[in-house]
Length: 193
Picture 1 (cartoon, rainbow, N blue to C red):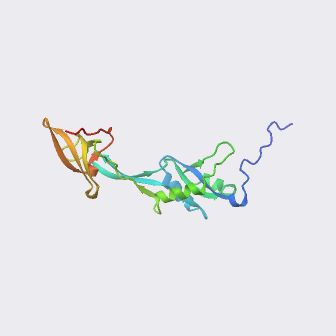
Picture 2: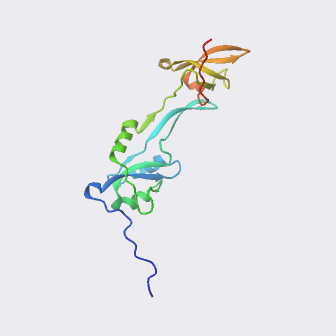
Picture 3: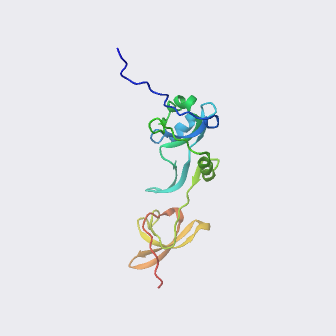
């Protein structure tokens, strides 16, 4: 009986000695980037980067600190593709290594170094709210919760902001904590009076 299936080449790329250990993009299971990173770090000699961002999120109970993946669903690992592909793919929390058919793209070292410069040793980048004068905001806490206004002054040293509100038929200026406002609205320019 004749074999109807053609012989398949080794799908793993041929890498030179200098390229044997490279950075690859690893897909993590949904919301398990931290689990996949911890699992891969347990493998012998595995370098892993799990970049995250930390920011204040406005919730119904007030502003809270949140930490999320910078690249949801993805982390970066440095390994020898030929020797470690199976252990990486079958690690807890890992969904697979990013590839296109029989091609596994390598993440350049320069890209990883630039990413490390942004996230630091802790692998967390703090994202500060970027309020500007003239920006529309919604007040999230306190007596004016739910009111909309326009930022008239940002006092970043004190983590406070001054907001112009329409209250009881007239415009009123209110000073609020920076984390007490949600700034997802459109930007407006104040007109000189």
